Length: 242
Image 1 (cartoon, one colour):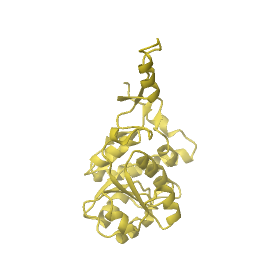
Image 2 (cartoon, one colour):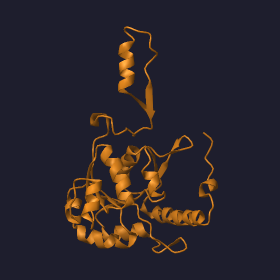
Image 3 (cartoon, helix red, strand yellow):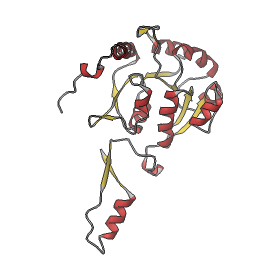
Image 4 (cartoon, helix red, strand yellow):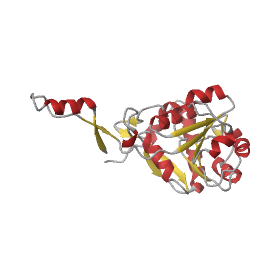
């Protein structure tokens, strides 16, 4: 945790020279989370982020990262929707070329087609937040992350952000019961993704390499099945005592 003093608290501190106003107020945020009103020089160094897709996940995460000071560029079939996320809109290839990290906010079935159109992805970090789920909350692809890695063999695929509903990623920050949301990450290059998790006020949870991603995907399908049946899936996992 770290603290940032608001303008109001600084004003109160100055007023103490001539009055008996109380001590300055300190606003505390989870480590890595800074509200959009904070100057950019207080934040982590910005990243060049590409977003493939213009749906809910693209809007929620892309908006959060843009407010955190990152350079966000969007590619989508619907350029008008993409422009509502960021003024920087390009083709798949242009966005890939301009980015170091790319969020794959696409329908699971469309990912490999888009990756083929994106051109050279060598060295890029591809964040896979997709869920290949069909009727009955079953997986239509047993290992979606591996499928993406095979389609982009020179890129670094990281599975993350696939376990929660899009509305959770719109929260600033996502906190439940006084605890910031933990975001599992599976992959071989998790540093950049961990920073992006912190930027939205969450806690990165490095859960192993990409070989562990199928477990995340299966967990998502299992939990969705419970929710569809009207069960409180969260009650299956009581928090550990602090």
